Image (spheres, rainbow, N blue to C red):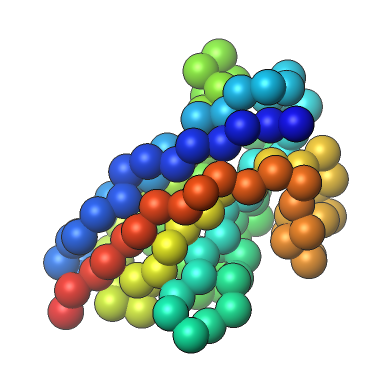
Length: 124
């Protein structure tokens, strides 16, 4: 079992930046694939980005590619999501997730472990 806690959300104007963090505990962090997902009001949860345990493989949703960057610091058991050039349509609750399977994170999102989420609001 992995305990995940997100932070860094907030209110930002369009074009601005935010960096989300997700701190993990409970299992060897470097063995886990980490992912970021988001859910806007009235919409289904969607995949945003994923990173392999070693950090050498990343995957992004098309809607955020070139604007968002996922990274991790295994020494700090933390994964980050740097979000630049934010748009109002990026407004959502952002969740981090952890799973041993890269395929699960990027295909169906049926991850074993989830954080509680952090709100990101982008004003126009």
